[in-house]
Image 1 (cartoon, helix red, strand yellow):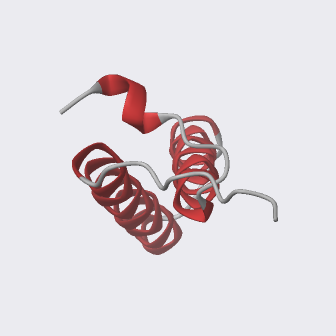
Image 2: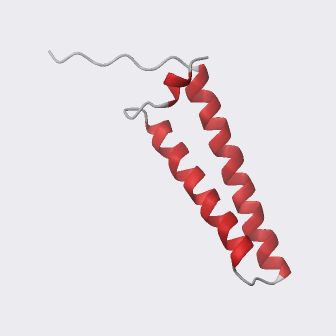
Image 3: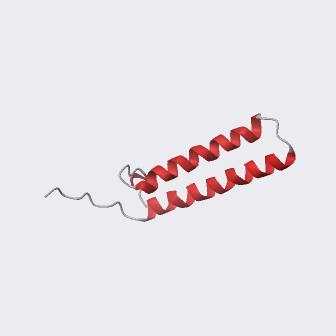
Length: 74
């Protein structure tokens, strides 16, 4: 595995991974800094955990799979 495979701006999985990780960070911030009742805190925390797991899975796919070859213009 090469860490350079992680940054693939032409791959849509890269942008989905960035969005999911940003969303899970925002949800974790909400859980820690906003007064929520117990049910709301559990729901938001579960969304944050699911987003983090999906983002981690996408990171693993980007690291494992070889980058796509650039298409030549004809």
